[in-house]
Length: 358
Image (cartoon, rainbow, N blue to C red):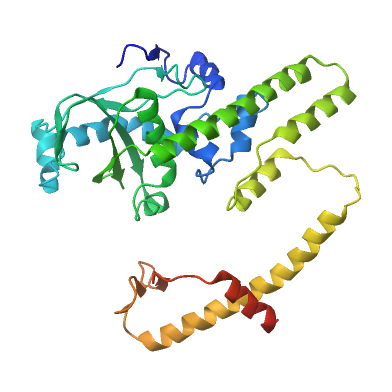
């Protein structure tokens, strides 16, 4: 580790560990701040940072991810990319192709005082990378992941963006210029993805996280005022101020925001008057629900056209476009339809067609 970097030796999941995490943005939280995390909003993280909500303490998935981290690291050290089938033998006889060590505590960088990082592993210097075809002279990041079932499907097109953002921040904080993500799928398939630094993404991370953290600092001040206030009227005014600076969801996070609001607000049996914006939203909602019904019928109609063409066959491929259509029998004996044909989607044209058909 470079001398000017700061090491915070804190035991994982200890009370000190949770307290420390309130003082900045960690690597695993970068995707949340950027709007890339499918499981958490920036607003929810904001409430954790200011002390309004208890921080996420993990679940079954994160538990097994932590438990299996060492196994993934062992596999990374012993995987021969030129002969992946030899991994089982190498694990048994201890043959290593590369080496890495576990990172203890957190690493801080004076250039980014509002962030911290704790990579799973650091690979040792002077090791050959089969992915770059070169010897990596300096140390580099090794991030260990596990995934099963529907989560593993998110890796079919490569590394999910939230994890790319995570290792980009790790490279920023450690000032290293290469990383690899090792993913153990369904407990048996190990795959490794190389990640090179992206100047644009790292600049975006620096800007977005600093902006987010400055809002958190404002929220912390307001939360202290809220906790010390004895006036309910004053507390209400303070909460209004917190709501004003609350980070709003990014495009595509509407469903996640709905789940957040359901948990944030407890039903109060009081009738309130709606304004023009709320009335417009309700009327548009009715129109969109009608559009949605038509869309579902149209989709099913197109599927039936394809099903009739396929008959007893289970796969269609096209010469002009990548992707395929499948209609295969699953373990329960039902045929499952899947359309993976890649095409340009004219959303505005489709919506206009639907409107004229209502």
